[in-house]
Image (cartoon, rainbow, N blue to C red; front, side, top):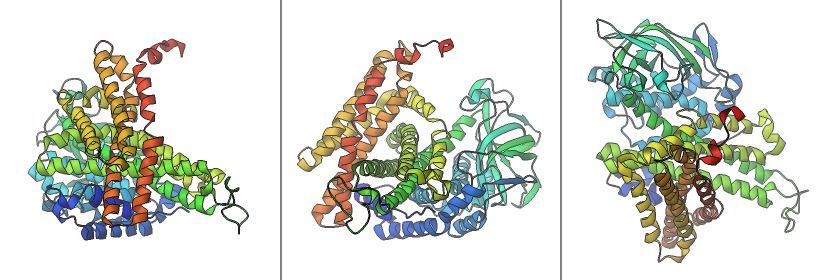
Length: 591
């Protein structure tokens, strides 16, 4: 049986020593003092550890069952969902006009992490609802917002996003779901959607599906796609529930992981829906959900790795195997604990340095999103958009690898289902696939985000890295961070130059290196985060404040990342500069 404890000390360090949230000029941040954030996170951690984490294995073993058109969630899920609602957790960063608490997105992100670490499959029910809430809030009419948002904020009603169809995933231009306009202004939606997370369940009174479909006159490809609100139960004028809509669950998928979340085939048979946003501009509205969802999936990457790491660390300290090569360290026992061995220590340091770096990157990106929405800051928006594919792709790739490494520490016991480590691996795997597979994230990064607005956002990122290094030049204790970061940034700039020089005449030269570029940039981003964290830790130590052991460990962990992980940037650059020929030389028929 695995356990989970929220990493409150690390979260507080990021919020107050690194991001210095209460000193920022972002509206709402002035209220985020240590006592307030500490109280919120402590209570979220208690709920995660005591209520959600014990249901993680239950959800995995029982899964979701389709009975007479209704999906039954695992035992204990409904009661836990009621507790989540009662505590106001689903409303944390939502608009107060619709019953939300109005806290910054950053706080919602921090709380979301502990919920994901405790029980990823469970958290997806309210996570998808938040994405649907955001789309309706941004693009809905006043009537739509008043009708749907209050009960979605409270999760009395939950929400979904319906994109994928049996014959098309990423290529939404191939979509076949149709929307026929009706005289009363509604539409009849007909088609089949697959892989719909939380598409049907027994924990909410109503489910508000956001469905992409093609309406007449939109033309071919994605330009003809519109977004529609299609509720499971129609909503009467007074807000009460009316007749069941003509939609149904075709099946619940049997998956590798996240068994506690109902992944459904949804069939729409002239279901009644209402246009959300502008006609034929559905992709714009959907991407309000997608960008939030991709940050959330990037968070899943490291949050599951955090839970796996905690259990691997506990096992490494408890399991006795062999003797330390430098001499016995547990003379009263038959063997020394696993953690004395250098390769086990390497494994744990890989996990610890990734998780803490990824948490910092995700929190920083969440603060940029707050800056975008609360200050209408276009520069922050551009930088956040640049970071999103990196956060989603890099962090889920590495998060899965770290879950595997945590399982490895358990040896054969990690392969036994009863011990729980395999669930972390199976759950983490989906994060590399959904909300845009990681290869698509890499293509988006290189093909769109690098060149957005004439490349000014990536240039601003380079300047930010340069300024960070320059700010610490006089400090000899920081050279272990700034020197590797400078080299990593130079590798990233060289890769960008290669794309500029070769991409126009041979687009494959850029696209063949896109995945390596995403990983390279991910390392640079974490290098930047570790540089900032090291400086914050040194400052706190010099001031004599904080937990000296924690701060010293932070610096040591950061040095590990800079020394052992950032050299991967040179490898990724070499692959990028090899161009398209090694990738494309073999003819398709020769495979």
